[in-house]
Image (cartoon, rainbow, N blue to C red; front, side):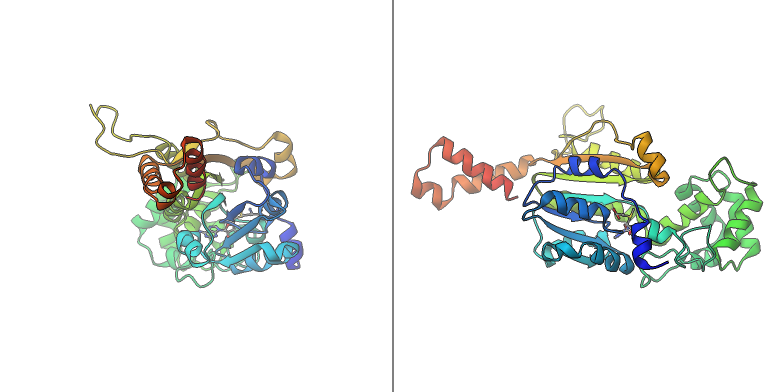
Length: 351
Ligand SMILES: C[S@@+](CC[C@H](N)C(=O)[O-])C[C@H]1O[C@@H](n2cnc3c(N)ncnc32)[C@H](O)[C@@H]1O
């Protein structure tokens, strides 16, 4: 299959909902932290034209190439970077791409990666047990499976795969290793826990656990979300689509915490945390795909979209007001309240 065909095989999920949640506007500046096949990026560029700009990031060099071809018509307004989104802040400073109007994370893997291109993500295609998003990363899934101790393997399969048979699978891995290919591992898991449970292959959870471990997915997500908030301008939007409960829990808890003015335990008499909200939740309830979308694109069935809007924290508010009120401009011009408010709003927009 050619790259173009593989790229077109990735159908972006919740596109309309994403564009709405990002509140994409002409001339806006956006970051797609998970460029993949460039489907969401193309929609963002279309809705932000004329004048929109997009920074696209993907850890997988193949994704950058494929999305680059797909977004060719917008090459003057896009910057595509082969990097891990854990370095989001550094990337934005390096390329002077901030503040931004919206940041998107569409987590997980693209169909391009799952479709068995020899990267070892799928248990349906024979390939070396690799699972690295970027081939320059050091540790592969085979390294983990063949060198970790039994207890450690059991722990990670249980925790990151939410697999009830973690201990049994780990014991069998240790007995049967070395395990070098996806099919070897998938068949071994099937022998431990039996055949398919409904439509889900028995190795699904074990593969998820290994992929999360190889790519440090949960740690990177947590770190990147914090950086994303610092890069958003006033009223900028953060939109995250996740595909399993571990990711979704991190996103949900992060957005809830950051949208509160105090995060002290409920029985604390007065606030001691000093935390102030930097986000406002856009949708209180998670957004999921319609039945029609799931029928067309079964991969979308587990998608969960959450969105929040950047608000100015109390600290930032004080700093901006103070800076503006004591500025030489205010003194020299003797601005009155309406002008001052207008200037304040402009200052907030530039944060
Ligand atoms: C579900 S796909 C995105 C699909 C994309 N929205 C589209 O419309 O084609 C997820 C992409 O995120 C990338 N990715 C996952 N974790 C990443 C990370 N920590 N840093 C950078 N890219 C990552 C994967 O390589 C994959 O290409």
